[in-house]
Amino acid sequence: MEESETLEINKIKEKSSKNSKINQEQIHDLLFGEKYSFLAIRYTQLILLVLSCILLGEGVFNITKDRPLSQITTVLAAFSPFLSIYTYYTITESLTPSLVMISFYALSRCCVKQRPQNYIFAGIFLGITILTRPLTGLLLVCFLPILYFND
Image (cartoon, rainbow, N blue to C red; front, side):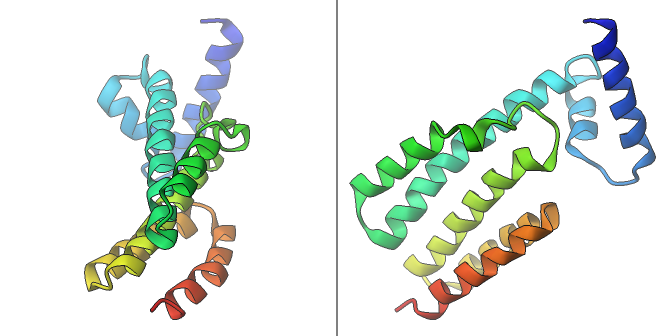
């Protein structure tokens, strides 16, 4: 590892150690050790993005009942550079697309089966998404009409 990378990692760790919140870097430090935590974060976020692309396709199928459309959506999301560009960074922009797609899937489950568990699941993931990036609270403008007009 180059000296500049080591200095950058040390600066990041200083900032995160001052922060009292537990973040993904600290969790990965505990699980994989300091030496491999950044590498593990990259792969964890990549796996999360792949799973959320699949859930996005399932969410589209739950709402539209059109399997080809859901498959196209999954492929487009999986190969979109706008979704994967931040995957290798430890910033909130890397988690936000995945959390939005998981929230959409949770909402689509409410459209399929109107059970209290589905609404709780959707609320939890939407809350996590909004806490991660407050601007995603604008999703409520899109999500509430879907729930309101759901037959």
